[in-house]
Length: 310
Image 1 (tube, rainbow, N blue to C red):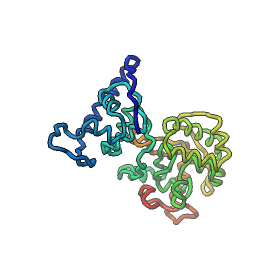
Image 2 (cartoon, rainbow, N blue to C red):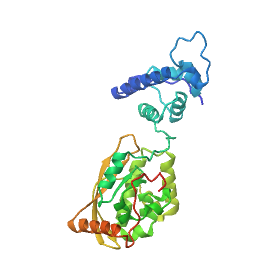
Image 3 (cartoon, one colour):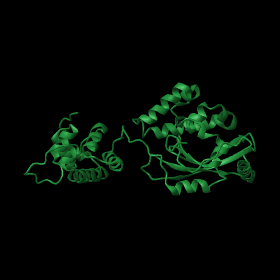
Image 4 (spheres, rainbow, N blue to C red):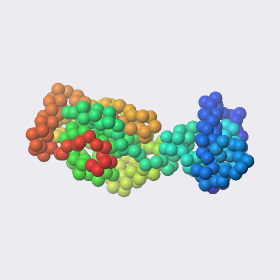
């Protein structure tokens, strides 16, 4: 990987961009000074006075030009590719939080993000349980279902029995026969969800997991392909959804979201709140059926994230 000497375009920059470059330069210097030569397989030598690594050593480890890296630490106005930022993050032994911060300061999209951590805090798991009998779930920006409470399975099916890559609301809405029958406004919901997914993907188009889901849907669903080609976009907004449950009848639910940490891939806890008294009574009836042993109600969830063997 090599970089040619950059062209300085400072006069055209805005003040916010200049501030971000200064932050980027300071962050790189602090990380460079923290890494010892021994940690990256270099010989310290007897005359070393620089704390941590030298600039030319970082450039060498990253396979970028010394001038280019020097300009980066000097907060010069240069374009930064995701490939180079990835190499620098690896050279400076950055952990996932530092890596995410580096990409944010550089204004680049991380094309090789670390594997998402599905482990949820005890507080979030407790909240999921306490929301019963309201269905509740934790999802990311791709609509992957990462965790859920017992009431979620009562309404939306036995997620414990699904393959993990199928635990995705967009995938199920586009391909599941049971969801097609249960969701009374299914066609409208699919169009809306595809438009939201396209809007969100604008920020994640280079990420493999997003492209994999899109390509999988394109290959599996003619409806998705047709909707995707419309290039419609939409933002998230609460609205009432109708479900015809085979045991208790019509459920009218409105979803409410609680956003998690901003750097966690748009993780959010979603609670499905009854839109009327009849729906609340029917959700309570579903909970009673579960306590009584089922009558076809899917199995319980014990509070663990789905990545822990569910």
